[in-house]
Structures are given as C-alpha cells and as structure tokens.
Image (cartoon, rainbow, N blue to C red; front, side):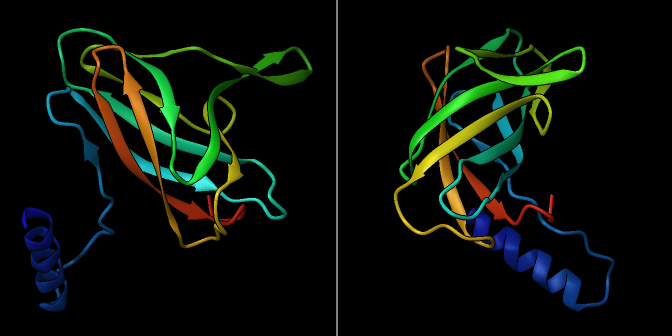
Length: 153
C-alpha cells in the first residue's frame, strides 16, 4: 500500500507540472541495514551470460558481506570481479563482497559484477528480473533488476 501511495503521489506531482525525476526503486530486507539501488542487468543476445550491476548501501554499524546470490530467473548467478593485470583484464569469481559499515559498494562494469547465466525463460530489454542477495548476517534481499540493452547502460 505504501509503495502504491508513493507512486500515486509522484504521478500527481508530475501531472501538476512540477519538475520530476525518474523514480528508481530501492530494495531493503526487513531486519538488515542493507539497501540496493540502481539495480540493472546488461542483456546480451543468443543466451549469452548477462552482467548484473547494483549499488549496496549499509546504514549499519558493522560490515556485512554478500556471501551468495541466486535468482528464480537464472539457473546460475555468480559474483565476479574484473581484475586488471597490466594490459590484460580477467574476471575472477569471488566468494564474498564486503559492504562496509556506513558505506557502500558498487557492482559496476569493470569491477565487481554479477554473472547471470542459463536464463529460465525468455528475457529481453525492458523486463525485470529478480536476484536474491544473501548476507553474512543471515538476511536476504530480493532485488528487482531492470533489464537493459547493451547500449543503454
């Protein structure tokens, strides 16, 4: 109900001619200090693996690790980090990513990212897929990711 009310209020304000910004949904799990913002997936054709990107913010007093990721939309989701070694770059799988207390960490092109493989159904730009982030404090956060074409970033 609260989400519907917020959306209705934003629509009303925009229709009255006030300046409006695009509403970017955030996700927060009950009982955890972590929120997810600007979550999106770079879609690639022909069932190629997709990249997932998101900014995680920790309002809590202690570091919290992302220790696992899963999705009902993909058969496999892994955390990777792009590592530069001079003139070459390679992707390495990581077991955890730390979200510092009162800080944030970004999964973004060229850094930490999610590798989404084996789509369970047809996925295309404009769709929304869900990724569940599992944290070291036992909480999980089901996060909606907007699917974008490669050129949209």
